[in-house]
Length: 198
Image 1 (cartoon, helix red, strand yellow):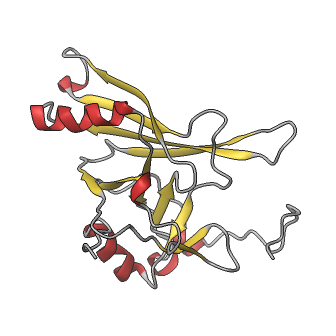
Image 2 (image 1 turned 135 degrees about the vertical axis):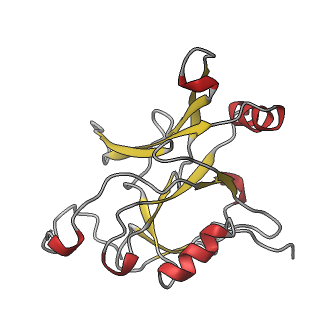
């Protein structure tokens, strides 16, 4: 049974050989929350922050959002609760570079009320790259919060933000994803976690 007391159980150390670095890698994977197979997605038995298998339902896939430099970003913050355990608001900020009809159609889909999961690869990856990937919105999902386009700003790009809905935040900070090792996780990420039809 997990420890729900909130008491610390280990030292919090600084690994100077893996000092922090800002940013995420250019491309991210967005997944429809309904396509996550919750029965076979697994969390480590001793660390509730670690996802050891992110499994999609048969015949589904995630979708790449291509970025340039640091155009895409992620953030999270604590949300204090008066009469319940504190929670965490996850936020993903993204950019659609080309406002083509095809890209606008997908951007428009984000506004229809569905929820999404974002998988990002951090520039900082930790020792042996075991901390490279993070999953935002795994339990409650992310919803479209803002979307803007201005021909006189941001080179006419579509700028948007997905976030935990107020009152429906996540029970933990974004989870780390490690499926065996970095190479295995990176392969799954590059393949958009796609699953063959059964």
